[in-house]
Image 1: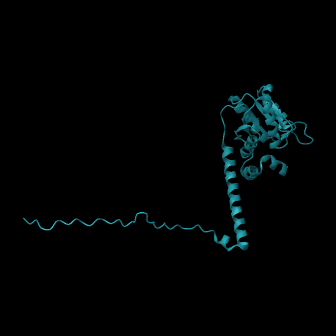
Image 2 (image 1 turned 45 degrees about the vertical axis):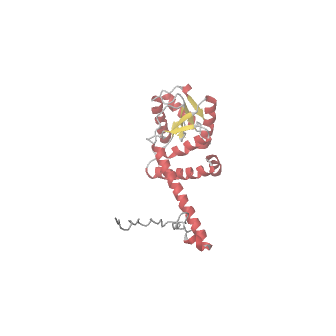
Image 3 (image 1 turned 180 degrees about the horizontal axis):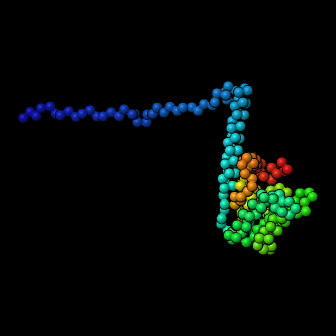
Amino acid sequence: MDTGPADELPPPTTDVTPVGGEVSPVSRRRVRAPRWWRVGGWRRWVGVASVLVLLGVAWFLVALFQVWRTGEARYAKPVDAIVVMGAAQYDGTPSPQLRARLDHVLELWEAGQAPVIVVTGGNQPGDRFTEAATSRRYLVDRGVPRDAILAEETGRTSWESLDNVARLARQSGIRSVVLVSDPFHSLRIRLMAEELGLTAHTSATSTSPVRGWSAFRHHLEEAAGVAVGRIVGFDRLESLVG
């Protein structure tokens, strides 16, 4: 019986991609330098200067934001000591600015945040009292035991005062502190204290008489100090600006 021609098998499928063949690379866009850089000459120098200015402005704005945020912080956990930064005093009477700081210290003391208070600040030529002595008397008159107060009475700048506080802290076994000052001042003194080896936190007074444009100006000044101090170090910055 004739079964007819055998069924033809379909031709094998051909792989269009050769084994071991090369695949065309995906085209990539080349990152080109800015035109002012490629042109060169004075345009390159102007471009570099512009970039540096923009970076400096950004660095300052970051510092300004951090100055503001730190000034809003109120650290409330227990520490070894409360450190109040000095301010003007008038023949043994705290100025409104110093009194606002001291009143906040009293709030922290009464809340039991630390067993020790450190008062700071020397005096100006002709003054009979130091800022630290004035602060101590103010606190003692309001119920703080005298033996719970340590005094740093020679510093005339924030760095000098905190350097002396760091020495007192080492002698007294103090490691962690909460720093009390005005809001705009808080970040710079915290960074200084950390540079001096202290574990530092901040709790700024909310009743400072420095407000409005004056407070804003102080924020700008402190942001500039923080921006530069982070680069050169606060010790060196203090020696440069006096």
